[in-house]
Image 1 (tube, one colour):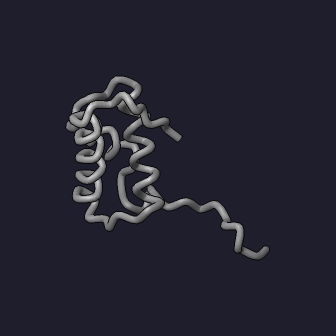
Image 2: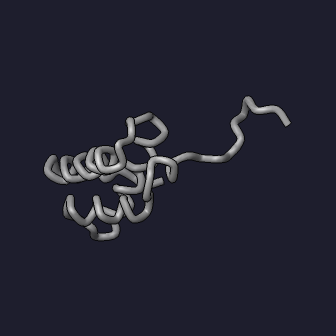
Length: 82
């Protein structure tokens, strides 16, 4: 999971949050806590790799997670029974 750099400027945080918000709008998906965590982590990772514009982040998030179904985790939960 990506580490959030506390030295980020407000403008950078706005770019990251706008990219994640745009992904949800593009995919007609409702934001959920797990989806937000996954997309925010991915956006921070991409940002730390040097992708600094909203357009670039949106494009890469859409390529990486091509639908709202791509955010689903198929790992069993601690409450599941086998």
